[in-house]
Amino acid sequence: METLKFKTNIKCAGCITTVTPFLDTVAGKDSWSVDTQNPDKTLVITTDKTITGADVINALQQAGYKAENI
Image 1 (tube, rainbow, N blue to C red):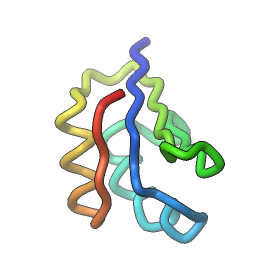
Image 2 (cartoon, rainbow, N blue to C red):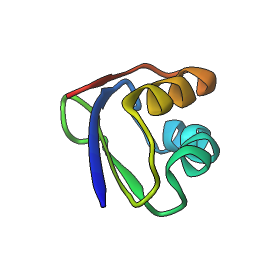
Image 3 (cartoon, one colour):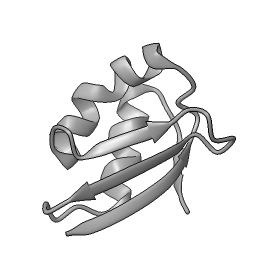
């Protein structure tokens, strides 16, 4: 199992709703979470799928959001 962490600009429940289909496709349903209370708006992905940080960043960019590896 692999864990990836990203600093994002996902700020609220509405943002999470927007990115959900993109992240579900890349990482898998129920394999990710965003801590909107953290100043870095941390996205944590834990999955058995083989994905790269670039895959996640590209998916978020398609949804209109930014991310960087941490």
